[in-house]
Image (cartoon, rainbow over all chains, first blue to last red; front, side, top):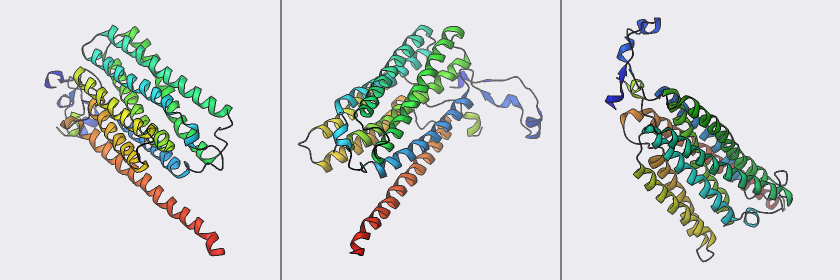
Length: 215
Length: 116
């Protein structure tokens, strides 16, 4: 770590003078912007709270099927296992992209990001297929409290994956154009935090919604 | 040097191929076990329930440690503090919701009996 730390040239500004701190005392990480990644992590923590609220709503409403179909009748576990496999594999391939970034292999980063994006889109396609199937058999979100909370929770996760995929597309284009500079490494790390985080939320979804719903 | 000036290392940076492969193997195991427990009718409902809860918690920890590389290094101080606080708030939110709504449900169901 110490080899990565350099100091910025002394630059006096009002805040620094007021705090009686010389700017040159503050180590700056030349590899990426640590303030941004920490700030993004704090955003992810607030996103956790959003999902906690939706999980709590589902925990209360998940058995209120209003005489309609229950999770036991609707959920197809082998299908959910394939979705889980896509998302888990994509988390792993994003890790490989991060490793490629650490050793400055630009084509490696682009390749693994593309694989990750394809796996993410496959997951989204499968989830869209499941949702449209449910709506077509009359088990849409308007049918019961169970289905309302189910579509809200799983749909919110899917929306996150969709925005993560758009972001990944943008980052792929930017890495191709600008290379692996400090800004791009920071963005790659933030997107990585986001992508791994979505997989952690999915663990909660498949465990507490699908698996417990079929018991 | 307080924690604010040592915040360079984010979770998710600084991993090795070995860590990612270990994480993947553990995650696959911790996925297959609860799916097997839920799909196998021979396993009792309570056993399956516990298997799902324990494997979910374990797999979340596996992802945090092996994919996000959350660890005890001092530069990750604020990452740990913020996630610990978040876990506390989630626990209050979810447990509190279930507790309160469980009681409400109980009271609502008791009403017809009283009226009879």
